[in-house]
Structures are given as structure tokens and as C-alpha cells.
Image (cartoon, rainbow, N blue to C red):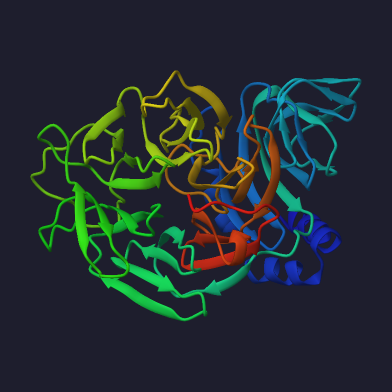
Length: 453
């Protein structure tokens, strides 16, 4: 144990500086904690965080079969072997595979590498950028892995804090920003002058928001059992305060928990209906439709476009600036669940064509809310900073991902606070990216001008 702590201290000092080392010492892992953690039963390959701090994270892993080749461009790995034996293939060149997140390459094969045999008590440092693959020779091969990340670029600025669970940012043409605090059942307004105002108390547990072409506020509301109001889609005239209910069910049944919402250039509203957040009171006695994606036409007609089992966990939804593509995030947290973005051709009549896979976040946390810039690039909130219950791994870094229309990853903004939920463009020329993450509202300069969607 002492040897492990010494290696960890040296690694953090070299990679992250004295501040991270002091933080690690403050959160020192005791031998008893380590023994209890390693005693947990694990099948196949599993990983769960023990602690994390500035620039590093510690987890445990078990491998019964060969792992995939990996390259971590922005972090080093330290393996501390607890049991079993393995060969680790190091160096050489990686061929094939895929980029699963910025700087994270997985799969393919390693050509020209060297082998390093590991057994109990061995410690191996793998520098950032070096291809490696774990090949167990006497499974189960059990080891601690310390991931030491390079210093991150300057993070987005924290504008506001002290909320419970933020979602749904949407900005008007005049620069006012609306966002929801779902857990506290409120909608907030941050004016273009920087004043923060409570816009709506008892907001029917609103989640996603959008601004339509007439500057009205659309809300995907989960419903409030105490108030007796159902899950629904509403529209608020911001000049008069008038609220219209656009939809509160389909085919004689209610909604589960309307989640995200967007308006296209024809005034058609698209929204997702998924599971209600588990931290808000349930709506008892409501016969609900399956999880689905809906469209509300300008004449008020409601149409179901996709429904389970066509979709598993429909979350974020976005429409391209040319109104020809609808993007849908699937966010199933269960083991083996869909955690990806699908791109659907969007017809002139509002119907959807066959989906193509746009990006797969598996096995990490999927995307959540999205925004789109004027060039058609998609900006997606995704990833975790710490483990949570379910089948997700830590493979998806927490942050905002920028994708080209063809699915290529163009950029990434790391976010250090959980849980990142959504993004929107606002400010002068819509060149500010607003980000909701956990208890905080953040902002960052946007390299591309955004849209109101």
C-alpha cells in the first residue's frame, strides 16, 4: 500500500503539480478502504471510481480476456497489479480503431509493440500517447489504474451557482436567457444586462426549453402531482405572460416526462417524451404512452414520429439549420443500452427517413442536450466526471462535444462539474455558449455563431 501511495504521489507531482498532490493527500485512500473495494465481486471487466481530484482519477479493473488497444493522448496510466498475470503490449503503432472521445482512441490493433510481463506487486507507468493493450495470461488479472490527466485548458466561466439541477437553456434574440432548475421546480431568467430573476415558481417541473420564431417560450414539462397538472408542452407569450397548452397527451394517453424540445424553420415543434427524472414526484394513476418522439404542427396537430421499441431512451433533440436533419440522443443508462446520436432525414412534410448512426458514446455516458451553430455543427453536452449507478462507464469525458454535420469530432470543451446537461447559444451575435451543469450555469466563447435552436 505504501508503495502504491508513493508512486501515486510522484505521478501527481510530475503531472499536475503540488496543488493536485495536496488534494490527493487530503483524500488519502486507507488500506482498509482499498481492501474493501477490492473485495467487491466483479464479473468480466468492470471499473468503478474510488476517488478523483484535479488532474487524476483512481479506479480498479479486472480483466478475464484481452482488452482492446488504447491510446490516451491527454493522460498517463499507472497500473498497480493486485492479482493474476498479464502481458501488456506497449508502443508501436495503432492501426484502425475509433476515436471514442477527444484524445481517446480505442480498438484496432497494435503493430510493432513490445511486451511487458506483469504480476502481483508490479507497477507500470504508461506515458500519454503510448499505445497499449492488456493481455491476461493468468486471469483474473486485477489491478488498480491511476489516470493522470494533463493540465486542462482554461475552463468556462461559472456565471451562476447555488441551484439544484439545471437544464434547458434557451436565449431570445434580445439576449435574455431562460433556464430551468428542474429539482426546485422553477424557471429562471438571466437578462441581457446580467440580472437574474425568478421567471416562474411551480413551473410544472419544466425540463427543456426553446424559443420559437415569434420569440415565445416553449417548455417541455414533466407534470406536477401536487398541483394536479399533467406532463405537457406549453407556450408562453413573453410580452403578455399568456400560457397556452399545446399538448398534454396523445391517442387518449398521457406523456411520461417531456424532456427536450426544438422548433424548425417551418414552426413545427419536435419533442421527446422519456422517463421522468427520478428526483421529482411521480404522477400516479396516469396511463402513459411508450417513450417516443413527437411533432406538433402549426395547426396544433400532434403526431407520434417514433416510439418504443424504435427508440429506447429519447433524450436530446435538435434540427439542422437547413431543416433537413433531425438529431436524436439515445441515453439508456442500462448495461448494453443505446447511448448514441442518430441522424434522421427530415422531409418537407415533417416525416422522418431511416436513421444513420451519427456518434456512439458507448460504453460511456451518452449525450444529453444539444445546440447547433449556423454552419450546421452540432454541440452536445455529454459525459461524466464521477461514476453513477447503471451500466455507463467513465469512457466519455464530461464536456461539450462539437461535431461536423458528417459526424467528425471538431472540438471539445471540458466541464469539471457533474452533471452536464445542456447547451445553448446566446449573447451578442449568439457567440456565447451557455452550459448547464449540476448546480451551475457556465458560459464560454463560441468559435462559431450559433442559432436559437
